[in-house]
Image (cartoon, rainbow, N blue to C red; front, top):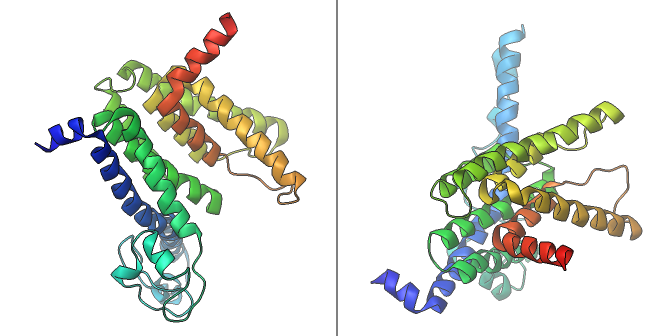
Length: 297
């Protein structure tokens, strides 16, 4: 019954995708903020355990982790960073609550960053596009999931220059799983796309390091391109690398021209890969067809 409704009324399926993605966008704000902090605490805890095993000092002298309250994606409840006011459910409605509160905390009137509704609306619109193109079916739904993950990875990398394995690896395995049914490409092309995606940037990393003695990118970039290769197949990798490189170079020059960035400071490459990969997922075949027809004309 519901499946027939989505088929007969594609606008209804698009509305469902928009509202669902809007709510997920609110959750992504939590993921973007908390996941890196959770990872930091996990690393510190592992370091403390190692120091406890190798140090002659009593274990109870290492108390940094013990002083921090437990943190997960669901606990503690969201609060205002200025006055610690607990955010009520009606103050946390995606986008609408920000407008109703005029971008301020209801208790202390501290300014709420506009980034929160921006991410929510970005997720809503970007998550709806796959459903608009493919419909509310296996292709549209899985690409919507991939879009959500890419948005989270983009903003985490912007903030911390970090692409967590907890997001990149599930994205890779999901791409292989989806294409085991031939949804976007053959499993053969998906597997080789993942392998070539990883080895491509891995090779660039080591060549750059041998020539300059510096690290040009992180291992998270390798894994992200491997994940994108698993979704799009090996034939889309040149397009993804080209688009991400061009966008990265252009943006770097713009930022340096307006004195917003110094050439000595590294720029995260993950956002450009994510954007280029998302474009290839949705319009890659059309872009390749246009490019080839342009060359042969």
